[in-house]
Amino acid sequence: MEITSRPSPWPLEDSLDELEQLARTAGIAVVGRLTQRLDHPNPATFIGSGKVEELVALRAALDADVILFDDELSPRQQRELERAFDDEIKIIDRTALILDIFARHAHTREGALQVELAQYEYRLPRLTRAWTHLARQAGGSAGRGGIGGVGLRGPGETQLEVDRREINRRIAQLRRDLEEVRRHRELHRRHRRRAGLPVVAIVGYTNAGKSTLLNALSGANVVAADQLFATLDPTTRKVELPGGRQILFTDTVGFIQKLPTQLVAAFRATLEEVTEADVLLHIVDITHKLALEQAATVGEVLRSLGTADKPTVIALNKIDLVPDPEVVADALRIFPEAVTISALKGRGLDDLLARVEEVLQGSMVPVRVLLPYSEAELLHQLHERGSVEWEKHTKEGTVVEGRVPPWLLARLEGYRMR
Image (cartoon, rainbow, N blue to C red):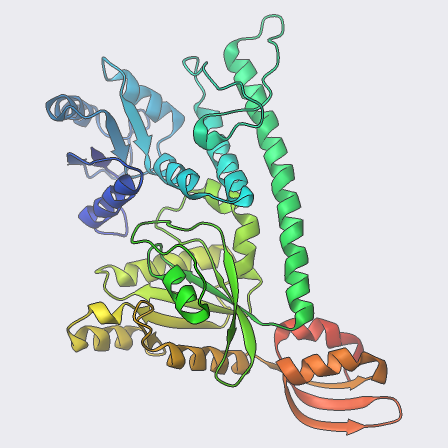
């Protein structure tokens, strides 16, 4: 059963359609919907008191055992709603549902750590006296209800206090582990920089076809399923551009409207792949009736990450599923610089790579440097990854004028000629 009451930039039924798709991804069958338009959520129960009574009656008529809210509930709202029912009922908000999906799809250690941290930070303020059955196995996963290392209760301590203290301890450990992951990922990025390979981060709304595109471009074997958040862990593959230059494409986690803040914080190490990229490749599902709203949502997330001004290529995907060419023409009027592709059928990929190459070239910065002969490797990188317009050998070294990608500037800083 789905519930919403809060005004949203998305049409009401479309937002509930997406909530239903999230529910199916989590293995929940939807049997009914209930809506209410309010200027402000009820601070006690989110929906109005009369609507709560209607919800209780509808739930009994449909024999539902889960109620989903299309917004995040406060701890108080969740408690008050649960008290409105005589028997046990699961009240799940949009944030908890997305966290559950992420827990199901996190297959690497990094992904599991990120999801576990987000789950604990969501659950901590929602602890009540009724939650006294936390699993006691060491190193347990939040996705399976586990929590590691619960100690003996001190004098006068309630179980709630013990649970809260242990969860805070686990959160602190997860943050330390993820900071180590972040440092490890940064080392990988430095290695990539030394190798002189530009990075293109593939971004887009969940299920827009990012993984399918990476597979098509690189021959990778990334999971590509017709469901929300099929893949969480970033995958990086080497791809050759038409001019012969090799670059790296990185598939990132999909975005969604009302993306839980806990996930944005927990996935900081993963999202740094977006902030550190040279170019963003924004994939838009042209077949979705809310393609424009989805693109706007991606733009909002990118702005929150401080990456909205990065050089960006827009690809309108799934054109093989659009029988009416006027639909494509309308989309191109909205996104005039976009490239139309079918990642599944491999259509338009040459044009896409050519556009990426063009944007990479356009983002290069003019430089004039004097490189000592001991910096032969740096000179090689300048030739391989930049564009050399003039070169002269002198007693002191090689004078080079040309254009280089922004990431190479730092390595050339000590040799730049004013």
